[in-house]
Amino acid sequence: MGKKTKLIKKTSRTFILTGLVLVVLSSIVLYSYTKDLLQGQVEESLYSTEARVVNALKNDKVIFSLPPVTEIKIAKNARPKTIKDTIIYDPSQDEMEEFRELSTYEEINGQIYQITVRNLVVESKDILIAIVFSNITIFVLAFLFLFFFNTTKNIKLWSPFFKNLEEMKRFSLSSNEEMQLVDSDVLEFSELKDEILLLTSKVRNDYESLKQFTEDVSHEMQTSLAIIQAKIDNIINEHSINDKQFEQISSIQKDIQRLKHLNQRITILTKIDNNQFIRVEDVNVTKLLEEKIENFKEMEIDYIMLHSKTDLVVSMDIYLADILINNLISNAIKHSGEEKKISIIAENKTLVISNYGQNALMNPEKLFLRFYREVNSVQSTGLGLAIVKKICDLYKFDLTYHFADQQHSFSITF
Image (tube, rainbow, N blue to C red; front, top):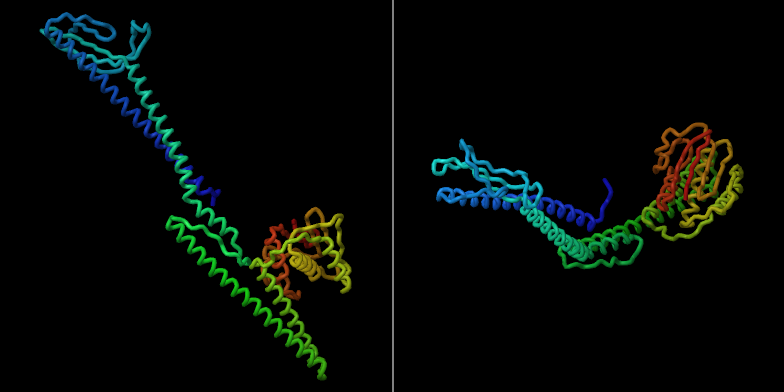
């Protein structure tokens, strides 16, 4: 799609283009019609003058030529009548002038006469120009008046629509505030308002139902997993089990933990999709990184290096900031291997986390898709980077990935 245009601007542009076309076409038509009309009047005057001359000659009256208006000559042979525009010298003006000329041959009393009568064309052209100019002036003035009147009327007419549109832009599912829509005396706008209220009410109800369903399912799943975990702990503590049973129970515990993490992350994605994280505050990302690194050091993960000259502060929800940092570092730890150094650079509104990797990813374009895992052997829910991407999209952060010099690097520009 091309560039979007406002409704009033688009209709005004159409009105202007239509008006200009009408001005040009009407001026051309008026010019042609008036020119033909004036030319017809001039020719009628020429024929009238020629008829008077012929009548005078028939009555043996003496007719003198009066160049350049009237010329009478005796001709040897008769020729066809001609009428044309010509430019000849006008003694009264002492210059060349344009005339409309009628030349006829009449046989009167046994003698052939060439009768030529002319009429000055300049006056007709002046009248023609004056008429066309007057038409354009009147048309332009009328057009300007109608344009401003029409624009003002349209703005007033469409005002309820624009106000309701702005109200819809401010609509939020997470807010309980009712939409304050404006009614209109235009039937279609009034019906649109009613349909919007009906639709938003239904959407909000469906959203609340879905939100409650998600929370209930998440709660029930967490409760069930906790009960299963407690029963397994009782089995281990109260009964003697062999090595094979211990391995099976340990595998079940790992699956339970994985389901817990999966449930938590799906819940986070759902909340982000539903815009439930609306709290925004200044978060010191550098301090948060230092705290995370200290926590990992307590788990004997001491190969994470932070490079930061100044504090990196970002406006966002602090809970999501914690998840964002934790997921990126956890991802680097899972895929670095052999306790290779993990480098973190935080400065100039940019965060870069790099970890060792022997080979580049086969499908980097799928890296941020839900449940996608490049290597199935790595224990992962496949949602960590999807959550990172979702958080960056929520706050319009620029998230990129690249591989160079055996380093996988994730870069976020805040």
